[in-house]
Each structure stands twice: as structure tokens, then as C-alpha cells.
Length: 583
Image 1 (cartoon, rainbow, N blue to C red):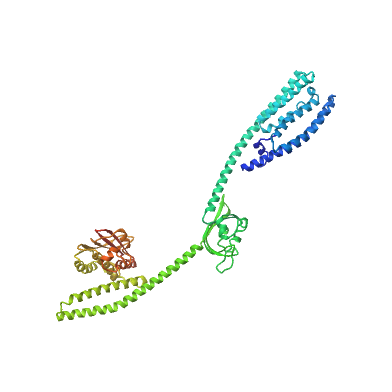
Image 2: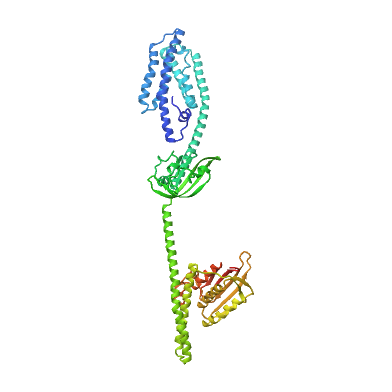
């Protein structure tokens, strides 16, 4: 008997969805069926058939040919030898022996009286035996059974010469055929069951393939992640670990899976002792079932090397039930080393900056002392030469005095920069009269602008007062106005003062506008940097150290304000100082 692959699978308690394993198990099942099981069935059935023939003949007083008995008893042995020796190279031998079984049954019927035998129905056992394989196969064996029996009757009638009652034999043949048809109709249920099973197996196999692909894709994602990932069950035993995690702790997969995660991720406490699991940052998620994240400075690798790690742990919830946790971590040794280098570089830069500021403060003081003496003696010489009538020497002397004053102003700026960088600046809050401040600035700037052929305009100032440091506000505005005058020639410089009624941020706005050379956007971004004047070409053409606007902005920020600039090359610039109404 040969079983259909799906039907064969249906006889087992488990359907294999892996195609290769399914085919291998199917071949093994067919081998056991055709070589072992069918051989055992023949070894039992045909000797029993011989006994039935003998009993039947004794009952009907019919002589039993001895060769029939010998054939029925020896056939199972011969069939076992043939199928055992030929099945691997010729599996069709099993199918052929099933048909030979029907021939052996006809020999038994012949030996039990032929047309007089009451055992003519026994070949239907082979038809019934095939009913679970499907209707077509059952019909085929039904026709074979009827054909074999008809051939036997024809042999007895026309070859042996017996008188056969064809009326009675027709009834037997019809009975065999009807019984075969009935068995085939019953076998339709097997076909339907098989089709449903095939469909179910196909769906299950497709689902298994999809699941395998999804699992493979997820495994690739986890393996490709730039962090170590470890999954543990509710008991803290490792059920998954990607390659990055294994490399980080220095273990193999066999050394990891199934072991307690806390024992593998050994780490030291701040006092240098190994963590025993109490108040452990890595076990916090298992204990609290809440997500945890942070850094740990002392994860101990399997080789004994200690590394810092950054980690995140989260619980795994399935159907509302806590089933474990997943840990993601990575070695941050390089980042920590980089942070140490950055901190060292920052400390070195801050130290150098403080040294620079101290140097500027010291040198500015040392330069101012002799320079003040030079300017003092220059002023005395100016008076003496004027009294002596030596007007021819006064222009050169006054140029010396003018250059000295410029140098002194530059030194004052450098000293102020140094103070601002070291934080050695104090604020004195006063009540400032905007109208008076505007007039004071107008007096100073009108003369300074006239020297460069510029006009200075002070827009009408509404009477108002605000609280701030008068000296520093004046200094900021003088830097802004002086800068506007420096980069404007035969143009206009204007100052507009107004109050902002913003309820969230009440402030005073000072707008300094000029019609000078203006600047590009890139120059506007650099204009507040120390020792720069927008760009290098401007530095070469105009005097100054390039610290005035830097001082102005830092003083403004010190008082809680800010300076912004808008400019168009060739058309001029507008600097806006915003100060809070109360510093």
C-alpha cells in the first residue's frame, strides 16, 4: 500500500512545515510503510488466508491443492525479500506488489473452489485499504479487483473447462463492483479532507515562511544595530544576545544563552567591589518593571578589562503580562576618552585665556603709565611753545599728542576687554534721563562727525527715565556712534531713542544709523568678534583695534540687553541696542 504524502502526514501527530524536512520525513514514512508495515501485514494476512481456504474447503468438502497453500505461505517471504532489496533503487516495486497481492488473492479463491468459493469477496479488503488515499485510487483498485476476478472466471470456463454459471457469477461481479463503487464514494471524504489539509498546510507553510523571514529580518536588524542587545526572561536568564553584546563582554553565545544575565555582566560599584545584585542599576528593570537608562563606569569584560557603558533597559510586556526585559548597551570608552580630551583642551584654553587677560591687564597698565606721562609732557610743551611763539612746531607736537591719545584709547579698550573676560566688572544701577543722555551724546558726536564731513542727527527723544549703569550705557553708545562715524564719510549718522511697551519685556531701544559703506552678511556675523572689523580689507583701510563693538556687545549682555545689526553693502548699517528698563 502506498500513501499520499499529505495523507501520510495526516496520520502523524505533527505536520512538518519545513519543506526539506517534510520531504525527508515523507520518504522515511513511505519506506516504513512499504518495506516494514506492508511486509508485516502480508506475513499475517496470507497465512491466515491459507487457513481460511483450508477451513472453507473442509466445510464444502473440496480438495485443497497443496501448491496453493505453499504459494500463499511463501509469498510474504518472497515479497519481503524483493521490496527490501529493490525499494531504494526502484520504489515502484511497492506499487507492483500491491497488484500482486490481488493476484495472490485470486490464487486463494481458485484453491477454495473457484466459482464455488465463498471467499470471492476477500479482495475487497485491498479496495477498502486504499479508501483513505482518495477516490481515484480506490476506484482503480476496485476495477483491478473486478478485472482479476473476471479473468479467473474466464480462465476456469474457457481454459480449465469447468461449467460456470454466468448468471451467478454476474451477480458476484456486480456485487464486487457495487462494493468498490460504494467504497470509492466513501473515499471522497478522504479527498475532501486531503484538500482541506493541503490548503491548511500551504497556509501554515506560507505563514511559517513569512514568520521565518520576519525573524531573519529582525535578527539582521538586531545584529546590525550599533549597540549590544540582550534579552532575558522573567527569571533573568539570557534568551538572546547579538554579536555586538557578546563582543562587548567578551563571551561566546554558548557561554551566554540560558545563564543569569547579572552573572555575565559583572560590574564594580564605586568602592571597587563587585555588585552582588542589591540596589543594582542593571537589575532595576527586573525589579521595578520600569524603563531604566544611564551610564555605568565599570563593566568588567570576561578578560578582566573594565569599560564604561551607556545602557537602556525596558520591560517586555506580552498580553499585559510581564515576561522579561531587553537591555541595550554600548562601550563608550572612546567617547569618554574624547570627553576627557575636550575637557583638558577646554581647561587649557580657559587657562590660556585667563593668562591672556592677565597679560593684557598688566601690559595695559604698564603702557598707560608712561603714555600718560608722555601726554602730560606733550601738553606742557604745547603751552610753552605757544607762549614762546613757536607756532611752527605746534602741528607736529599736536600730531604726537593726537596719536598718543589714540594709543591710550586703544589701551583702555584692551584693558576693558580683559576685565570683561575675567568678569572683573561691576554694575551701578542709576536712574538715567533719556533726554539728558541724548543731548550729551549729541554734543560729543556733532563735533566728531563734523571732522569727517558727516552730519549727526538726534531724533526727538520723549521724556523718560530707566534704571541702568549710566557710564556703561554711555560707553556702549559712544562705541556704536564712533563706529558709525568711522565707516561713514560725507554722510549722515543718526541716533533714535524710543521705549518698547512690550508687557513681557519692557525695554529701551537705541538705534544708530549711518549711510556709510555697509557690510555683507558674512561681515555682519563677524563684526562683534574681537580684533576684527567686518573683513580684512576694512581692517587695512580704517584705524582701530577692532574691539569697540566687542566691548559694546559684552557690556550690553552684562546688563541683560543685546545688540543686533542690519546692513546693506554700499548703503549703510543700523545697530540696535536693546536694554531692559531696569538692570
